[in-house]
Image 1 (spheres, rainbow over the protein chains, first blue to last red):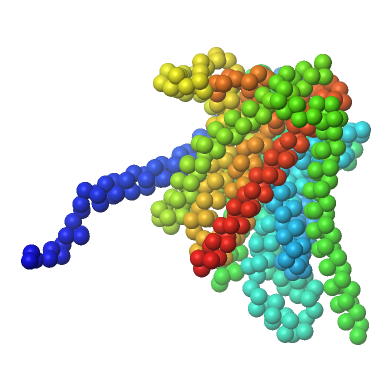
Image 2: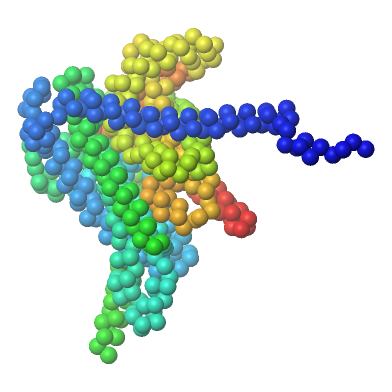
Length: 295
Length: 292
């Protein structure tokens, strides 16, 4: 009987070596893919910043665009218009979304809850261009484009995003808070309004900020709803189409005009800066609130 | 007594408001479907399902067929999914299992940030930066080495191709698939991931949904041609990009209706993939539940 070689399983056989190599390669590929995604982000952002920086100046964000094309001028009307359209959309979407989230976490029975969640998921999955056509059929067909029509479409896009974020946050609110309120004889609606919602507030705000960032860049619906506009600052959300940044970029990108391209890069820089900052802010906010929830 | 009455009113009011919000969401979906199908009705009455098989699109002669658009949508979406799925899953694996904590906290948000870039900016970048590069370098190389396959046929010399559009879509879809697969790989501390999952609304059905429905970037990148090509390197058009391109300058009621018909096709596809994904997700959830 040969002595048992206790070291045997520890020595790499050909098979083990091959598995190690494959493992190393798979890890390498996965790492490479992650790096590639980060690199693409870097390339796109750097490309926009490098090209947009040439167009950027104080005039660019405070002046009207030139009347008859050509160089010079700014995109002030588009910046104001996008801010207005998104603000009105948020004013519609956020309260509705929070109510839906409260309904789902506090009131809904299993069947009603499933139906509402399905509606939110379907809404979330809808191509934004279909939402644009919906609002066109609802408000614009037979009338005219308005900034409000654009806001409504953006609100439909934002609603499921905010509702989902709020719902997840409401679910994270510890049950002992609700139970403590119950034990003190606090009525249900006071518990919800006074305790549960404030506890989830930072999460709701985070979801809203992210939805705003998403809505600010939406272009497809605005092409039918708020694209025929003049080139002056207007605040008339309900009466006429508002200039906005996404449609400005889209229109300029479809024309082969170098001065237009330069302005489009500048507009892209402004929009992208806002969106990236909003994302970073939302993330910081979420990290803070999560720490507090757990602490 | 007084307090109790206020409480009763408050309770009823809050409940009613919440119910109203939920009802509005459901009504919105129903109305979206109604508006789109209602708009598509004239075109459907005239062309029926033949619309999906015809390939001519001549608005001035009231001749409409969606076959090239279905083809363009299918090709760009499938290409994006074929490229993005392995890459996205690999990133998900890296983020959930391989990356050190510190690296994960940086790379994860950066990958998700990629999804935050608006499609109109990505599309603009696609025309001016990626498109020329792909036309000058990538397409000739693929044609030289894999040209025996019809999909890598002779590249054209100007304009942007379905191939470029597919690449742009891939960039859009990768972060979605990455964060969903990451969440699947680390299902353990559920409460921890839930908050993050809520953030990007990163359900994996959104991947295909976005690829199918992305209008803007595709419109910008693809030169508008309406013939069915076998080669990825020719120009093409998709359902969504055709709507974005022509709706504003539609020449007649039937033209508008035909565009609504395209939207209806998108809507049906979107809902179908969504339901399918939910069904799979449901099964997955149940398996996880059983495994626990």
